[in-house]
Length: 86
Image (cartoon, rainbow, N blue to C red; front, side):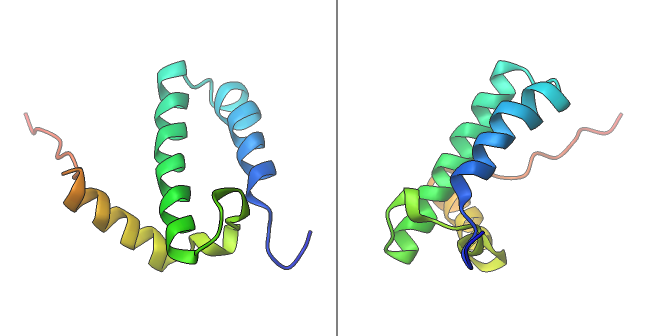
């Protein structure tokens, strides 16, 4: 692989093999992962100035992921769901 790891083949493997075959994930689960990863990639593309298809694994380290999580908390009001105690 090149110095920048290509994200598309990794995502394809994740969605074709890992989720449905190895994890037996439901269609809803796969769709949720798809939507979340799409938002993350679009966020990373905007921050790096690259096209989404050019975002590399290296563009998704700790700082961009934390910035993405902060943004979806603020803009979409997403938050951690606390379990109810019995």
